[in-house]
Image 1: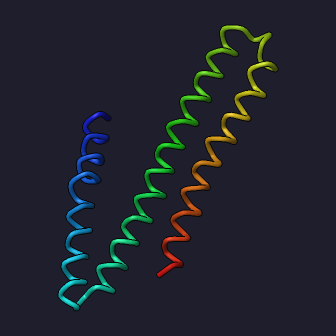
Image 2 (image 1 turned 60 degrees about the vertical axis):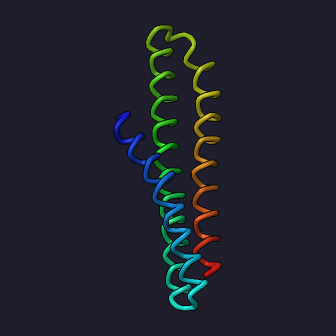
Length: 110
């Protein structure tokens, strides 16, 4: 898992600035600027929703696992654990929906 996160971070830190500089070079040359802009926006939107969904999924899985472990240890506290867990899951899901909205705004701005 750490290798995957390291790979994604490396791609984002190295690959995206290279794409940005390529887009600037194409714009300076006067040709292909629209295609590079569309490619960069599509890549950014895809990364935004993909990483947002990945992070949301991991967060929801950890929250549900912790809540179920707490309920398994103390079944009498199920009512007190369930409500905060559902609120936390809703907040995590709202961040994923925010990523979706940002991605859609980026795509429709083309």
